[in-house]
Length: 220
Image (cartoon, rainbow, N blue to C red; front, side):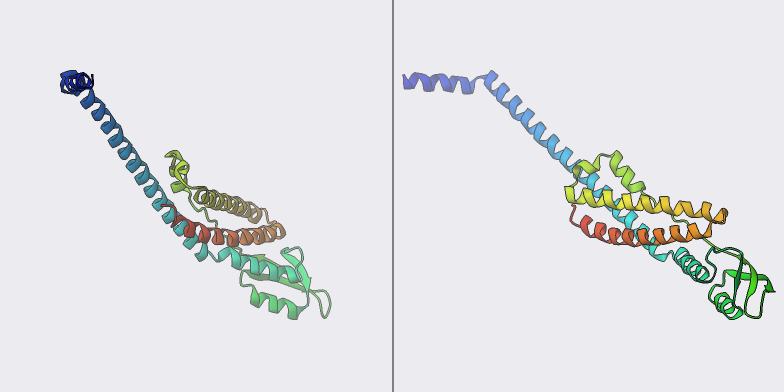
């Protein structure tokens, strides 16, 4: 019986239909394997390109933010003016010596006129020449990565730092955009407060840039 079984098995293995089925099955499995390898390579390459672009974008945003000093300087000037002129208005009273010190510290303030109210108090009329710099750090690389569905390929840690850094960046942009309206409306006290808020967010953003760039080196 064993001999008959072996003989039957040999006939099956040598038959054309078995060879055809076997070859087809191997071919299909091999095609699936090659296709899977191709998809994985394509996904990994897409992920690498996206991360490279994001790293470049964040690095440039960080460098630009570090170089931006105009608004920090304006904040310092406003703090100095407010120490003598609580409302930061164009007309206020002060001791002549105090006014001269302030004028020397704040080059964006110019004297227009003065009237002596007493021997020790003058009323001063001034004009301000305030300058703002509005940053608008891009997030093009991040948006492109989301369109390409790259976030789904990232680890939780890498995705978390990216979501956080672009959220803080957006908050920074939104707060900074308020400054122009406040400047045009002459709301200098509110502008001072907003500048202080922007400076605080800027510090957080620079730290988050650092953490993100460090984390992204381990996302490959």
